[in-house]
Amino acid sequence: MTEIKFSPEAIADLEQTKAYITEELCNEQAAIGTVAKITKRIRMLSGFPESGAPLSSIVYFETDYRFLVCGNYTVFYRIENHTVKIVRVLYGRRNFIQILFGEPSDI
Image (cartoon, rainbow, N blue to C red; front, side, top):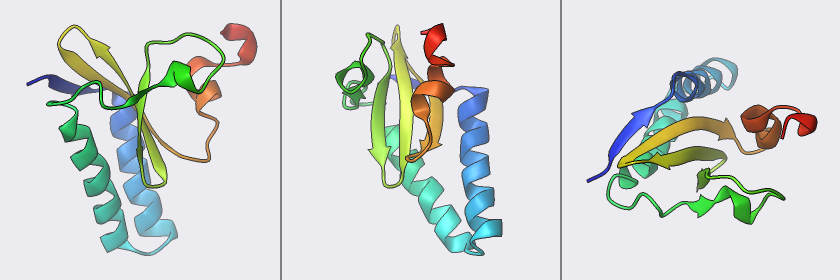
């Protein structure tokens, strides 16, 4: 089995997702369910680390990032040696390229 590690940003993303759904949408059960669904999909990567699509299949440059769509959220990760590193967990309508890679001139 492949080990899964979370970046501090990914942990913060999950915490912010739960807080937003709980506080702004006033639905704690939905918040718990959403985070549970995301973490369940992430746990599946321990057995199938390459099950997410390569990010380079949908962007115009090469990258070693992979991604999983989990409802309205997208999990971005990298495979490093025998470890899956969860880099970010972002709401699907956010500008993930800017968040992951910075301004276009930085790429």
